[in-house]
Image (cartoon, rainbow, N blue to C red; front, top):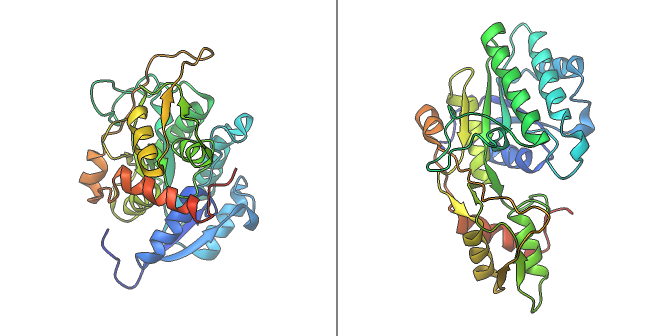
Amino acid sequence: MTQVSNPAPHLLVTGAAGFVGRAVVSRARALGLSVTAVTRQHGDQRDPRWLAALVADTAPDIAIDAAGIIPGTRQQDVAQNIALTQAWLDALGQLARPPRLVLSGSAAVYGKGAATGRATRETDPMQPSSDYGRAKLAALEMAHEAHQKHGLDVQTGIIFNLVGAGQACHLAPQVFIGRAMAASDQPLGVANIGDVRDFVDVDDVADALIAMALRSQAGSVANVATGKPTRISDLLTLICTITGREWQSIKDPVNPTPNYICYGDPSLLHAMTGWTPKFDLRQSLNRAILAHEIGRPSPC
């Protein structure tokens, strides 16, 4: 991304203490933006009146919402992602001059609708197969309706599989990194190694969301992805090559599902903003593993 010129746009980031939020704040400041970083300690983001007052008080030009509940942490609460988005939309509706808002979505919205023979596009069916995916799809649809019916400038970046220092330890690839670093002589046993994902560096994701906030079209929904399919077996080989460990395939008798393929086509985002990812997977894994080695592992 090109560094912005003065006067710098003022960016409000909610969820600023989270994995994506921290990266957005860091990258935005590096790019010369004026940033107001908001965490749950500042107030209840589920309260639209509080959010509206916050926006009125800070007067941002643009906003990025990186708040949310990820799968596997408080699974019963993932539906709160809908409430968080609804509160933002309600807050914008109370303002005379609402800022542009970019929401952090998830590739979990595609689910069974993901393409198998090519990269998944934004026009492919969204058929989520998890509670998390269904909640993120509902949030995306609410944002689309807010734009279509009420003219609000709300966009959604559909984020594919994240990688980077600080990722939650139960999510791939961090779960594999943690297990590899903790292993001694035993190979790392992993099931479902034929699954295919699209791993994108968290700093690249931050740049993508900022690019949408600065240059994208109102109401846009765009994949934040590399467009490169990575089989889990190849991911494990990279991790074990870097760490000097070994891995082996194991059967999952509880969940013997067929291979799931989902990698994203970033063409739309590139066309609108010029964004392209800077880091390849090996670079991202090297950075995440280094952070683990120097005592900054992901929180467990």
